[in-house]
Image 1 (tube, helix red, strand yellow):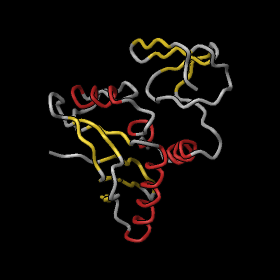
Image 2: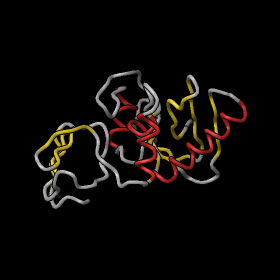
Image 3: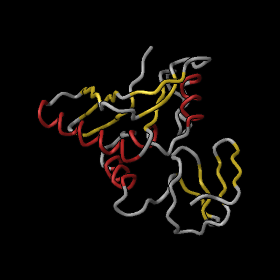
Image 4: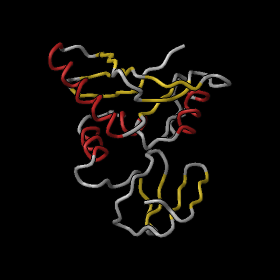
Length: 171
């Protein structure tokens, strides 16, 4: 759904012409008003890549691969993280490189490859080269020249669950 007009104030997104129960693709990390009801996140079309990612993320306590690195996050959220440490959900952590996937489909492909590698090797830290551009973001500290694209993915597992997976950038 593309809003006819929208107002963004400090992460609060108001969409006009969207009714409660409509399927929308929205960024996690802000409150979204849909038909006058506030909530975090959005419902996704059943079976979509985003819906599959959201389901996987909900199964592991502390998982944040979609909410912090998904295509639904914005570059401005990623830049804010790189310069201040603030996550898309508004939590302040350490400043670090901050990235997002270019699409839900690319992220789901990376998740499946990481899960296959984890099953084969049992390694809890996995780096994959997807051999195509899969993500973008900013180097820690931001500034001129900090924007990067990448084909590399970093995945971390804990207690057999995928906790995070993100496009990996470096200098």
